[in-house]
Image 1: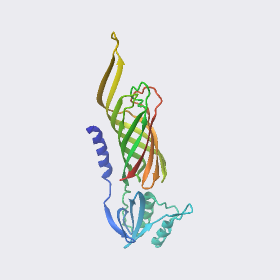
Image 2: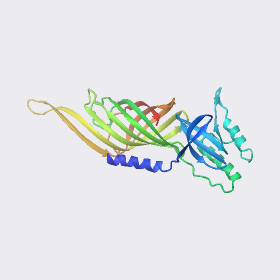
Image 3: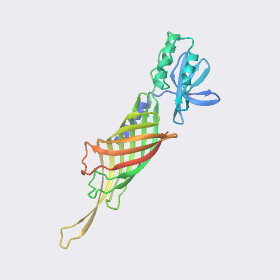
Image 4: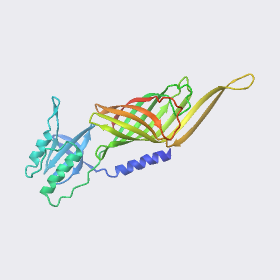
Length: 294
């Protein structure tokens, strides 16, 4: 367990090292803790508020929020008009500017370079987020014996780490999964695993991803009942338990759908494994859950 946690903690420390300090600003009577993405004649401020990205433009002592409201299914792109007004003293086009941190960063840096020859562009920051969720489902535990191919209830917790700026299609997940015994298969397992996810579909409302479990620590217990070859035959029940730390390299797929300030998440887990043996049954490992931004 120490090895598994050390890997995850090291990843967090390396990622968190580039975070920028936040400052408080008051905009239209509302106080926000904002990150500084670009600082210059025109300063770009941002943060996520209740799971929603918010961007602000600061010139002199005036701070204006950059908005893109939706009416009748169409985005109004008010932020472009705001930027036009604030940069009217320099020829910088807003036509291709998107309301995303990388696009706004480039626009603000271009304007500041025109206004100040000594402007030094800051490195594009990251947007490090944690998401915590719970899930439940069923599994036929194909990477164990399971002679009757029995379905077992499962439940657990996910802690997901994402960077919505530089690595928006990638995520690391620390997962705890508990497998409960069923009437037909007396097997239980508690597993702590590290997972990598690649989001091959990425939209504001929906993500679809491939999940790779590359390290796992498992504590398991099994009850085995069999008939001895003695005369007369007798029924013998044996209990075995143990722990195992390995690199299973199993793959699954999943999807997240944004609802309110969180996400409904569906996973089809452990469809195939490269470094573990299955019992050759068709994999059934489905979980449904909900996660939210910390």
